[in-house]
Amino acid sequence: MKQGLTKREKLLLLILGLLALIYLAFQFGFMPLYNSYDRARVERDRLQAEKLELEMKILNLQDILEDNRIANEDYDRITQDYPELVPNEEVDTILTNLILGLGMNIRSVRFFTPPSNADSVLFTVVGASMSLEGSYSSLMQLLDEVERTPNLSVVSMSFSGRRGGTGDEIASGAGTISIGFELMYITPQND
Image (cartoon, rainbow, N blue to C red):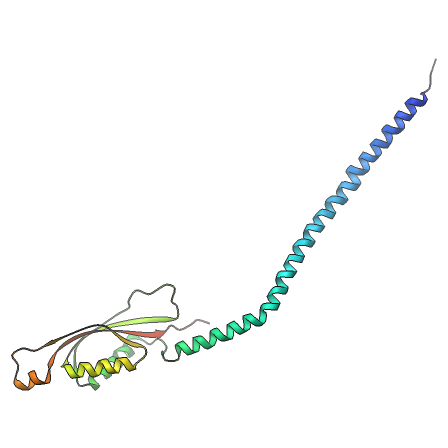
């Protein structure tokens, strides 16, 4: 004899069916929607942070432009007394004209590039070592000229007078001068 399901079994099957339906709706309906919502919320937060950062940059744009203008003015002020980098032949001509103009004779010239500071790309320093013949007063005039030239400095110097010369040579203070120069030039910018 065949017996049907009891009311209790029917109720249990109905509850199990509802639980299975709720589980399937939760697993394949609610969870994908929630994950999609969560990803969209994270993306929205990221975009809001990016928007805020861009708005801050826009607000600071005037400050940045003003800082840039001040930096350009400082650059112009710093570099106004310095010429652009020239070849060693022109440096030789400049120093030769200076020395000969003061009545001294050149015995030897040697150029070198001192070690550069990697942080300083604005200036290039060219060094020159010279052996000269001249008077002590000519040396003093040379030092005065160097002091008036912004891109030229003396880094080493020695003077040795002649012994046993004539009375005029001793009185004039003639001797041998060894002098080291550094010339500072603006490094050409590759814009």
